[in-house]
Length: 162
Image 1 (cartoon, rainbow, N blue to C red):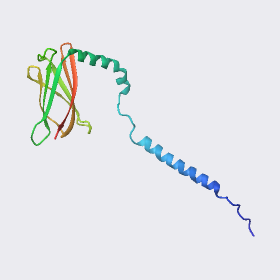
Image 2 (cartoon, helix red, strand yellow):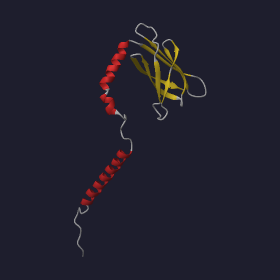
Image 3 (cartoon, rainbow, N blue to C red):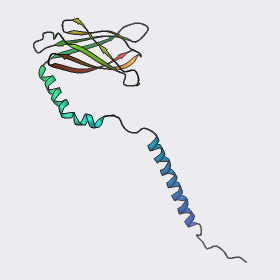
Image 4 (cartoon, one colour):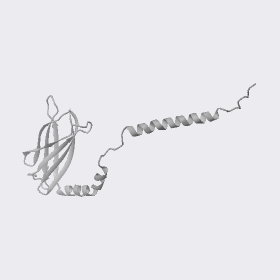
C-alpha cells in the first residue's frame, strides 16, 4: 500500500491561491489607475499658483475702482442658439464708463471644443454688448474683460440658452 498524505497537506495551496487573487486584483487596479483619468484638472497649476499673489493684488485694485457692473445675457428666440448680451459699467459716482475695449471668452463648461472669443461693441454710453450666435444651446460661461486707459476690469457670468 502507498503512503497516505498527512492531514492539512493542501493548506499551502490556500495561501498561494489567496496571494494569486490579491496580485490579480492589484494588477487590475494598477491598470485602470494608469490608463484612465489622470486626475489632472488644471493644466497649468504651477503657473496659476505662482501668480496667486499678483491675482489677489489685481482683484483688490479692481474692487478699489468702485465700479458697478450689470451683465445681462438673454436668449433670443429663434431656431438656433443666439444670445443678446449687454454689460453696463458705471463708475463710483454712477457715471457711465466710456472708451472701454470689451471682449468676452465664451466657454462651454460641459463640452470641449466650442470655446471662442467675441468682441463687444458700444451699445450706449457705458453699455457694451451685442447679439451673438452660439454653436450649441445649453449652459455657457462668459468671462468678460474690459480694458481702458490704465484700467482693467474682469468679471464672469453664467447663462443658459434653452
